[in-house]
Length: 238
Ligand code: PXP
Image (cartoon, rainbow, N blue to C red; front, side):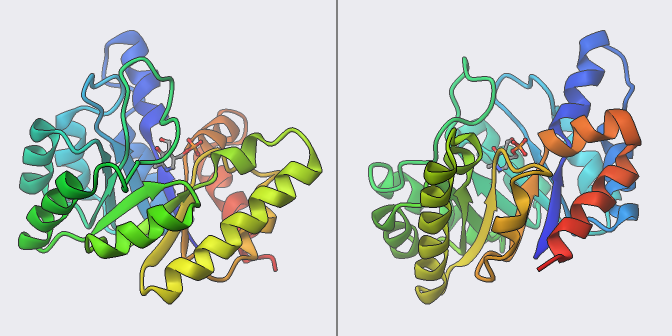
């Protein structure tokens, strides 16, 4: 299973003092040196962490792959079409939320999403949709030509009892199998950490996980390179 590191929180820390450090692009390079397979950043409408210039620099400097998380708004679509990331992950976005809450409602947004996906495909950019592990959502993702899905693991990560956690895990597994049968690529992410990662790492149908908060938090104590390495070790364990 591959690991992509989300560096948004490095930008949050930088913005707290309005200067240039810590540099999220520097963080991306350290994550790559530690063995990460890709870098993820989310260019939000309010630019609360990652800024336009960060995305442009990341595109130029990193040597793995750039996954740009974004809401399908005209402004951000225009930027993404210029930057040409290796993958665009479409997410829902609400101004007041602390982080992405819930997956995209692909069923409800079928027509506009189909148009957006086709615009990216015209430029040769593959698209992933961040969705809850729900059959209809996955089926519709396939129907509108998405290349892959990212399964929202937030409910699994936040489950308060073992029973509930196992239930969410089984659902994630079943939906990953379903998506792969349809020919979709399968990523997963949100809320994954050093304690809850192992069972997800065993799901062979999931090709890649995208992790931000837990790794950056760990990095505060052990450094980013070590934090990424520790997570990679967990992904290797079967
Ligand atoms: N995947 C998506 C689509 C996200 O929006 C986020 C949060 O930015 C993540 C993965 C990473 O979540 P976390 O920071 O909880 O690891």
